[in-house]
Length: 364
Image 1: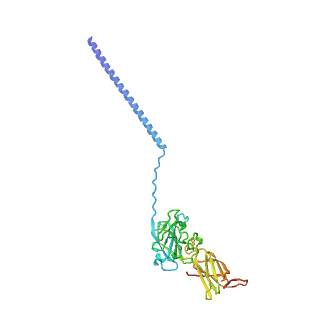
Image 2: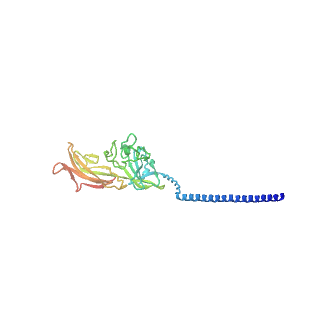
Image 3: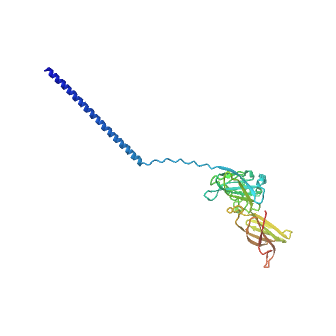
């Protein structure tokens, strides 16, 4: 009986162990299944996040990479001297070394020509009494117009202001460009335009005056020149041909006993009396205005009214002539007549020919 009980106990214990083992196995299998499900869910969720992220990246624009601005190239400056030669002389002016004791003056005006062919702008200017100092800095590749006025003995003719500037044609515009002799002056802004406004005009300022129109037409020899639209390179050389823009009136009048003849043209007035010779010859020289648009040596017609009067010793005045003259460069316009009583009364001129005046070549 005890033996049977013991066998039963052993069997029950064995069955219990078997059942426990089976339960443990089932528990392990169940735990592994849960982990597998969790892993699969995690993979699916991560895949969804990756796909969502890719979809969002496709919708958003790609940011542009900012362009690096180009550094502008600094223009190269080239310093060039300006030389001169005369229209009617084989001797280059460089052989005539000028210094301050000569009293001659050179005026130089440089205008920059825009690449879009707009109006030229003031670039630089200067007034010189020494040829060795006529040098300017130019920008390589830029185009310029260069104007020159050579005025022999100008220092003894022109008015000089207290600040050192000389009068027209070397007076600066509105006093903005206060130049010093032999020093180039460059434009630095709207309020400081380096420009000699009256450089190429035919008037001269012998005493202080506010307006150029109040100045008389110059009667002494000057030389003007122009280099038009020169583009600067390292091979550029600058030589200006200087030309006279002189013209004149010449009167040949048969001898008259008394009184004098008065000639008026523009702001100028000339007086002369009869010589002892049978015919009195008087000539009056003055400058034509320089025509910038036409260029060096090419001038449009310049017209002016010439009036001549005869004044008696007692103060009576008789008009002899009033003529519109078309003046030409390097030409004398010649009037030849005598003074006498007119058939209708009074004193007037008696012409020697059929026309009022003739023209003849002139050297000044």
